[in-house]
Amino acid sequence: MTRTTISLHESVLAKVRTAAHESHSTMGETITELLNIGLRAKSLQRPHLGREKFRLKSFSMGTPRVALEDKEAVNTILDRRNL
Image (cartoon, rainbow, N blue to C red; front, side, top):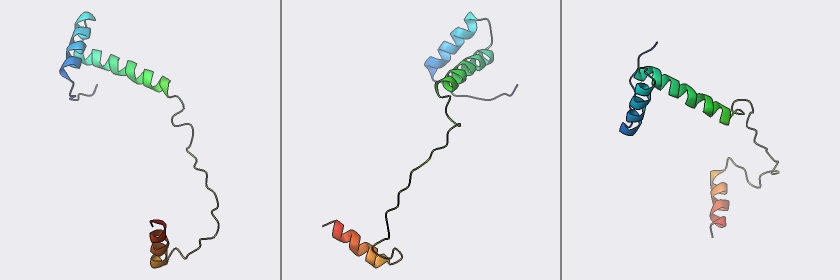
């Protein structure tokens, strides 16, 4: 088993201590059990994640009215729209 340090809010720590005491187990065992329960519940709530790829539909907008490489021409058109 790997050792690690975690930071818990005082209220959560108190609940974990109580649960460990009531189940006659260590803090580490109790935290491991609670994390496993939470992780299982989370995976059941979102079973579709990782299975479907996001697809973005694209549409043809036709030929540009200005050469997009011409920065001045693009800025001129954008400036006209701001009026």
